[in-house]
Amino acid sequence: MHLRDKVVIITGASAGLGAQFSKDLAAEGARVFGLARRTERLNELAADIGPAFTGITCDITQEERVQDAIQQVLETAGRIDVLVNNAGLGKFGPADGVSLEEWNLQMDVNLKGVFLSTRAVLPVMKQQNADTGFGGHIVNIASVAGLMGNPNISTYNATKFGLRGYSEALFKEVRQDGIKVSCFYPGSIRTEFFDEAGIAISANPMTPEDISSTLVHVLKTPDNYLISEIVMRPLRPGG
Image 1 (cartoon, rainbow, N blue to C red):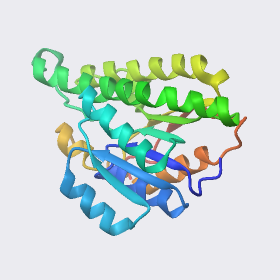
Image 2: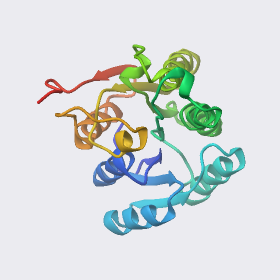
Image 3: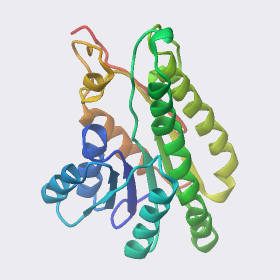
Image 4: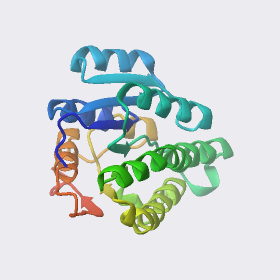
């Protein structure tokens, strides 16, 4: 896919990976719509990137908010070429210490939000495939926690294992509709995630720029070439 003038939606765009994705895809010539709850952060990002970026305040766990955001993109740009389901969070701790609120929050953001956003764009992409022969590309940002379970992250593991299964099933379901589905499984990345999760990050993590360069590469692959899964880790996490 050539990224110039393509319409890209990125959830969780206000910081970390989402902000870096937005900058790099805009630099490639894409028209980026960033969804996030923090309006002030979105405004700062828009001022930094320029007219190629539009921030839309949206809580992706709320069905009506997601539908409104997707409709706003369609009314403004007329199509949706890429959806990057990037929004996610973790609340780590012993299984018997996880509150119901923490369980529900992680399920809502990490799974429900992906479901709502994906469901909203699929009819658009299917129609684009009927019109042009190619529908679009959905990229889900999971984690190595979707590949292996570890102590004290059981709820987060459950959401990312769920996202892995959803991604694999979706890929098989919509490939004949000309829609690519890719799932990324990154290890530790230098973002706000670990501060919010309440655990220490490894001494030598990957950077948002590292992951973003891979996203750009995957999106620019030929239409009939699909990279369905990628695992990414720091080579020397301990430094």
